[in-house]
Length: 237
Image (cartoon, rainbow, N blue to C red; front, side, top):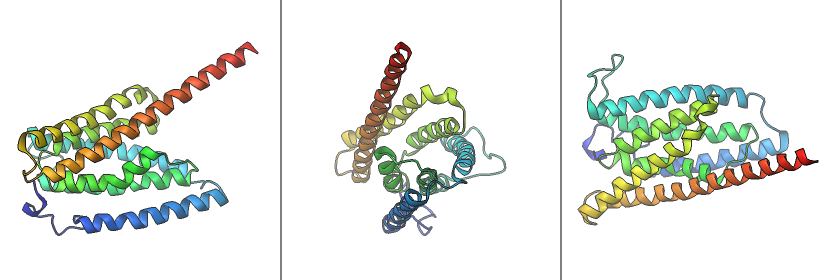
């Protein structure tokens, strides 16, 4: 599905220029809020608001994932009275990546530092969806797996602690499937194929996500090992 073949080409945030222009305000408010919290301390409403957002976004991710899956397999003609076209779902999924900017503001407001993985991911995801969803075909697999991962991840953040062990698996699954699909396209269609540039950009971005995800998991494991070691030493004393 190319953007010019759909009815959404005139919608907000569907041009590369408009996507690029959102990064300026994001970085400005990011740095401003970070500086304010550093001086004044965390905002009192941040944690309960973040908790509410986690609950709502988990449900949204589940619903959007089902709509995307239904768009491929056609389980139902209508869902809750809604009949969304493929282009509508692509646009909604694209817009959701701008909404996810709120994660950064929520964490900053609560006094939490933003890591490299989250920073790069949230800044660049709208570019990924611009190139790979709005202006390419066969986007549903990665989008569905991403929605599934987000449903589980935000549910975990909302308090379902039992989901933690599965998050690395679903994280790798979405990245692996997305990269494999685009590498296969480029390898079989060649560099002159109409989507080759967009697919190559997608591979580069998702590969970088994978690298940062690995570093994040490695750092988390090292921190857990250090905490376990410290507990053992404390018991000996």
